[in-house]
Image (cartoon, rainbow, N blue to C red):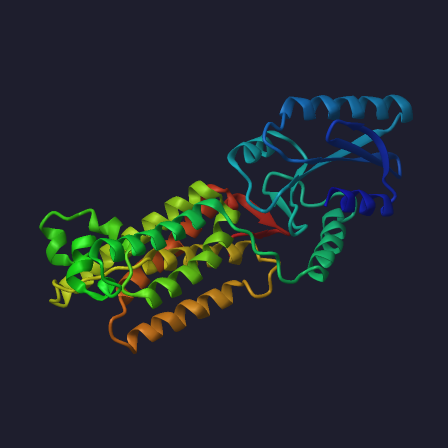
Length: 349
């Protein structure tokens, strides 16, 4: 991405003025003054003081050499459109700075920063970078992530352990066995088995139930984890499953079926589905098969299937999905999306 930006700047008559470490300085003569672009890739440990030192040194050299006024702008390229607290704090302290998402080429402008520089430079860069991004769109190689694969492995291992302990390949179809192993029901929960909110997430009624859940989880779970990070993903997954189970217990209590036994990772999976849908709404994927629309359609069809068939815990699905949506928007707030404007429009939409 940095090389592409440099090429676009040079096509716009910018010349390399100086380089200091991972920060490049480019200048362009403009009437009676000079426009200066400071380009850098954001990484942990980015030093605001180092940037200020380079900016001041570059401005001093230009003024001394060319006797001209300097208009400066810093473009900081982040890996994607999620900006951490330190970066946003640096931006709030700096003047004349734009943030760019390295995966899409989009430029994000804070409200206190200039909306224009060098005759709509933001539109020039973005149109060209985003065009190339669209041209390169296609299926992105699937990447395995550690936490999600560990969760899948735990689900499979628990399933095998139940079969071994009970010595019966059909043990997971037995409601009494599953309840003993940690499945949830309102009756047992109110009698003190609170741990069922967690243990029920790792139990499945039969091999097809396990296979279908793990197949979906492997794909969407890894996709979400590599976007929001392992820690955030773990929190979203566990809390979605717990919330889904709570909603399920409340629902069956409400309709007078306290003895219904429920188990499965579906609540947590629907939470992952909801969170990923929100993330993709804010950060569209390069993968044409992975979009917010497709995920919402998938969720809607699954819930519809549940309402038209018996034995499906729709309450857990809906509860987990709603929490996933909430957690997605909450993460966007934490990552400061609500403070960013894009092309004079509020980015959260």
